[in-house]
Length: 250
Image 1 (cartoon, rainbow, N blue to C red):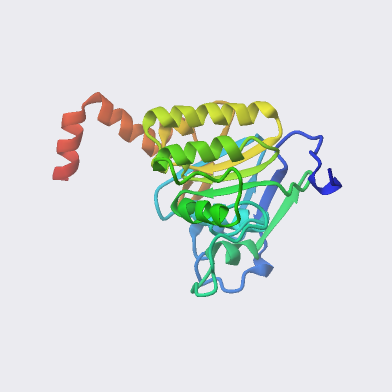
Image 2 (cartoon, helix red, strand yellow; image 1 turned 30 degrees about the vertical axis):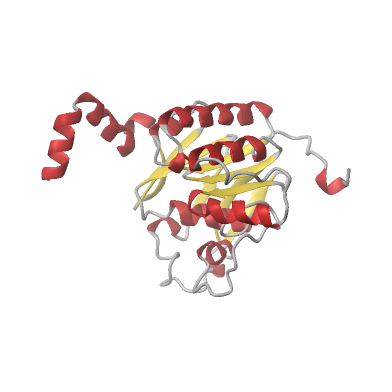
């Protein structure tokens, strides 16, 4: 085994801190740097193996994960290090790439293995794996959700840093439980670092994780019960009929 591919004999987290370097921002008025999240003092520390980020659509969760992923060596569209599943030559702008150029990072140690999973580009990545004749890439012959789970089981228990952007997108509630079990196995190995953005309260509830809420005020620690996602689901479960009637009449 080459030295480059040998396991690192240190526990996760490997990425300890990311921060924004104002000197590297090309244009403060251009997206994504206009996001309230990306103030000059933006900094995100990773103290646990699993970090979960929640927040409303449009707050910048996916953009932040893209930036971290590109900085770590992954493609904007997802995949592993060195993969190029999407042709970006005709893209107007690569959001992850533009943010990554302004981010700095502290690693202990630098890890070069792992995966960036984006629900919206899973099909493209799976097709790419088929095209390069990966022997374990039969993800598209299953249902969308089963393909997700098969992919997670096959790719995501090795040593590395794993970035998940809304992995619940194709998962039923029972399959979200299966994903929780996978997270538990990844956590238990001691050599997997997970950074995840999700809208699923079931996934937010994973124990021993750092749970952060992203809003117009930036990132802040939050408890599951204080998230808008949990509150809405609790109100719905308490009175489904009344909740739906009130929602559609508002």
